[in-house]
Length: 172
Image (tube, rainbow, N blue to C red):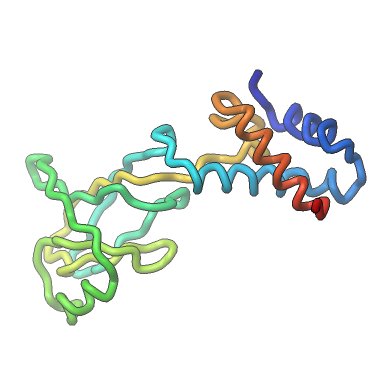
């Protein structure tokens, strides 16, 4: 059996025997928390993505995709589409190894600068294409009506939702 948003909400109410208005109005939140728990606990290969981007000359930053959770790899593509993979390091390493953003060249290292940005070192001297392979956060079943978890792991999604519902109801 697979779940849609509607059937999952109904099942949660049936299992918990709870139709109280504040519980029902928080079912989307309960389900989203369950999905987050699963996605951040189990690294499923179905939640990998590749995207292309561009390093801009003299700019040490690269934006992450909106659904990005964490990286597997970041590569620079040369004019013949040959890949050169950057080493994932820490911001402090990049700041120590390349203390000035004016130190330019072909980037060798990257790090998560903040929630939406990578920093690279050295700063790119030329614009170049990139490819990011990353773990992403899929759309919630509450947004799209169906989801990979609802179709392929319905028992896991139900169980995680019931755990979140139990917490919401202040279970023992």
